[in-house]
Amino acid sequence: MATKKATAPLKKIKPSGGTDDNFFSLVYEVARQIPKGRVTSYGAIAAALGTKSSARMVGWAMNGCHRVKPKVPAHRVVNRNGMLTGKHHFNPPGIMEELLKKEGVKVKNDQVIEFKKLFWDPVVELQF
DNA sequence: CGCCTGACGAAAC
DNA sequence: GGTTTCGCCAGGC
Image (cartoon, rainbow, N blue to C red; front, side):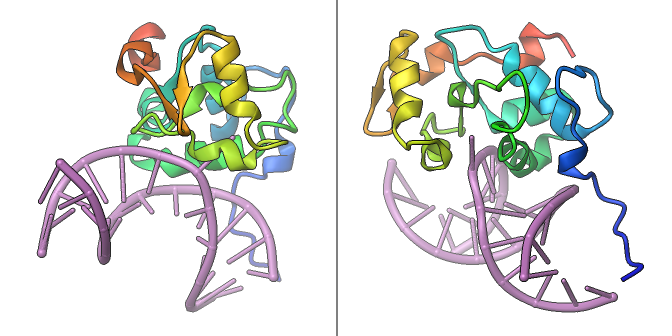
């Protein structure tokens, strides 16, 4: 199939490359900037990158968070409701809230307590 | 090349 | 105010 969709090959992501032109790497960068004990949302990251409408892509990028080095603190990234929607993608599932609790973030019923207070906005903090 | 899926979000009902 | 649907964009089959 000579039908290459000119998409961004996820496997081409460079570790520790830092500022790559790949949208995914941008997501990883921002995610790494999340301070301990804080959380953010996929949409917030997407908005920081200028693609707020592509919040799904952020989550999609997180799909390869495990393959990227250094590992991305995806456990600090939750959805807009403060719910740990991505916990099922962790290994094992449940480690996400464990890590959050360990960092001082209270998690109850797969939901971040005081999420609004712990919310870390990359758009503001990173001043994009 | 086309259809479906997917770690979201906001609008509509 | 809770539930459902559409929209976004990219990847997999």
